[in-house]
Length: 314
Image 1 (spheres, one colour):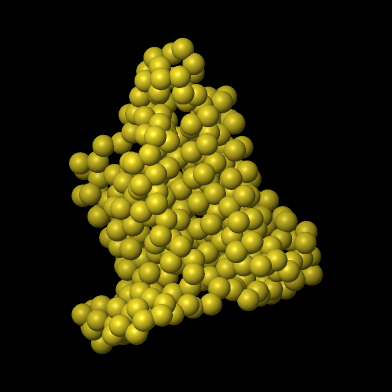
Image 2 (cartoon, one colour; image 1 turned 90 degrees about the vertical axis):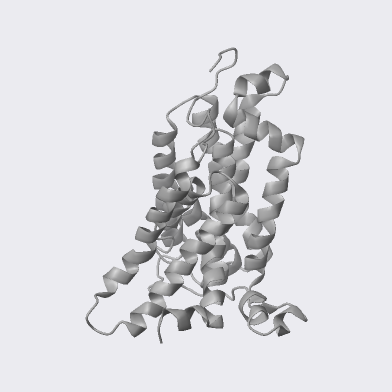
């Protein structure tokens, strides 16, 4: 089986969409934060905490959608903590973001061990099951690949146009974008810039946590250490790749997921002469190359990383 044959299989495209789903959630969350002028480097830790929180909710007897909402609430809480230090206190967004990642990651592992001290293997839950969309799933190839996914994958695809519409077609979205471009103009309109930025960070962090919850409640059925595996940092790169635009973020997530799905199948046809580490590295290298070319014409938010203080002009 060569690469062309792999691309022509239903399994490849179904896996691509499945791998892309947590990236879509987290990339949109980071995009919302950065559109408001705040770089959220806490994404890796927030995704880890979201994965643990959603899984723990279901493991303790809650329902699946309740677990998704709980993960979003926990992510929003860490986003609020991030916003307090970066937006209201004006501290370094890099330092605070790394601190949030370390805190959230460590806290998730601590809570896991505190609640399940005797667990030797990750306990499993009943995760979201594949839902076949009536009629659409019967379409040859397309239906089998794109309409036989879990509900969270459908939700990930649905929120992309919602975020686009919210950012580009609503007054709130305009305020968020202007807070990242020219916060002084927002303040001149009588709008609280700090509240806009803080709210964007909270909402964006909730999206990140849902991306983490996807891993434990849809892709897998258990929580284990290291399962986020750098996806948060990939999402930061995808925001740059997408030039801070939701639709291009969807394309970037699908591109990286496709490369990731391709490397898994490429290992099976390569023979013994190419080390498997090469295939593990391939999606990251190709994504970096694509990001370099796509981001050359990108226009970043002008007030990104710039703290805002009332009465000052940038």
